Length: 231
Image (cartoon, rainbow, N blue to C red; front, side, top):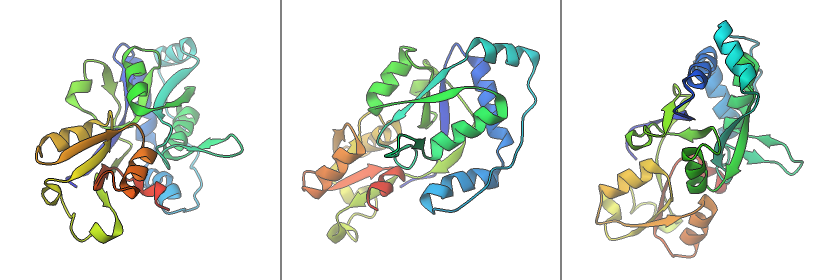
């Protein structure tokens, strides 16, 4: 649904140094390698990282030393962006990007997980330092700086099997109940353009899937991470 959305990192507004460091790390990851990071989870491809480092200024090195641990937030249910394995390891697209940027820059970015709406509010209060896998929205600018994009994704409409041929776009959802994850700005903004659609907010993707299967909603508006629940 609509044009591709560039996913970025959001950083507290008083840390422009971190924004510049993240952009350096992102720039050092080639387009091909970015696709390999994403495709490792969407297409289960095997890949090897190219050993690269990025040049840092003395001021950037001092800033890194002064900020030894940086918390970046994400929704715990956004597989494969973040995957909590049974052995305690945390993997996924965003985890791999952070590990790569850490190796390239010397940063110590780590992941804080929770419910997205709560994670966003924590970041606004500077209880954590930034956010992962979100889009650059104007209404977020008072709170965050934004990195360069890491990769692009799309919004999709998900429906029960018998309805797939009916719900092909937003216009076809007029009069229907469409679920979305609370706090997801692109979905909220898109749904406001279609007042004839009954928007139903849920806290997590798993709640959306349950509501769809139980007939509580007719369709789900979400990103590619929702596909991972359907495997």
